[in-house]
Length: 318
Image 1 (cartoon, helix red, strand yellow):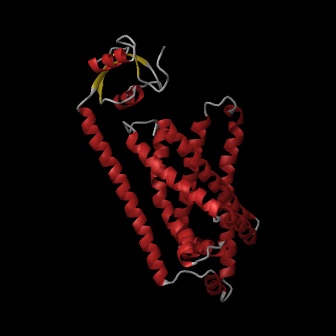
Image 2 (cartoon, helix red, strand yellow):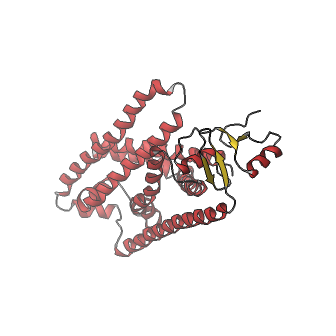
Image 3 (cartoon, helix red, strand yellow):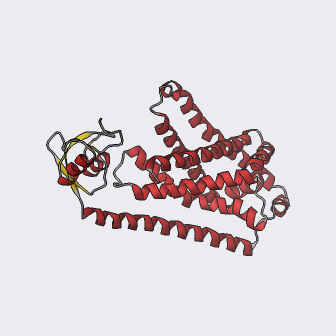
């Protein structure tokens, strides 16, 4: 798979996840109207995302986006990157561990044990039963939205029309999660008032078929299994990077820059990757002179004179 194909496939999966996030936030925002409005919106939300096509699209996108993120992490020749890219990577790697609790207690609990997840139960659990989980879920939603916004911004930043629409997009990016969080807070107040009614909590949990001790233990095992698997996957990626680095050091090359500086870098690096590794500011593609017999030999094989290597992401000069 080429890097361009991988990034396009990952971008397509990201669009599906962004659509899910926008609809999820919109549903939360209905809490500013009433708890019943949230439940009505949830019916349409689940009709889409718990249908067979919606399930395949959502979990296919999660799988593709996650696996390709690990592949791109392995494929990077250096972990030196601009701050925005490092922020997006860090958030993206943290999100699976943060999201697993909510996903297991809602979607997986519904799928495996028939536990319903109406807003009454979710808001009750996150606001009254376990407010620490509610705080973590709030942080998770903010980080997921920030991760998405960074990706959208750096995907669109070279479009000619983007600067004109940026203020409007920024307003939407700021208002949507704010309204969603305010809607959830308003729903929490409504649930707190209902919970003071004698018998309401027990009746609500009974109607939602809340998980018993045995089901809760199995859900905890599922959550821990996912976290262990994810941690192992991350460790494997970094071990593979280290092994590749050792192999590449055995065939390193020298790159000469116009200012006279020479950098020794493992073979297979692009000029951008080599420059980032050495801490040299560099454009995405730059023409540099050959600094090793390997480079000059490669130039001659491609029909170009020695000293005319082009190892960036742009096309070579003709």
